[in-house]
Length: 161
Image (tube, rainbow, N blue to C red; front, top):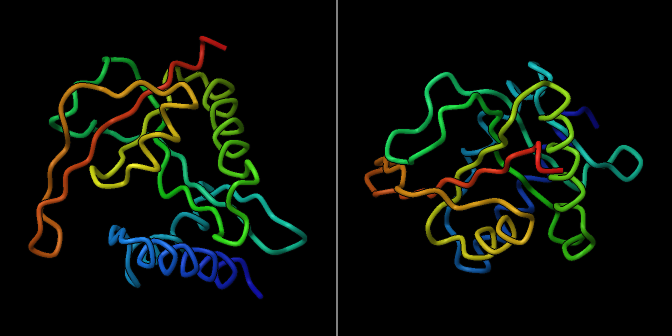
């Protein structure tokens, strides 16, 4: 199985699990449509068992921070699309990935690691707060498929470690 097929399978399992739990944030198009680019640009990180990805997350800088969220003015790396295979939840894989991304952020000279969380994804809000991320004031709002999408920003200062 090539990298893309394996990663696509991981995200497909996560989308199915989210739907079963009433979270309709991702679908058959997103995030799959951007995964190949993440792989090609070397910005997708994986935790694997053998060659099977169990956890994945992209990380890269954003030129313009998301309007509506009140960020500090410092440069930052942004986490995107953290996914843990549903069969491997509660094994600290997400926590391990975030710890690695915090270290990577620091090594690359960025003072901040940021991300956005959709308003209805309460498990993600609790997860990031438990890992020391601070919820920022304001929200990013966009219309996606005719529906209002509201996302809240979280930020972690890596120099605190």
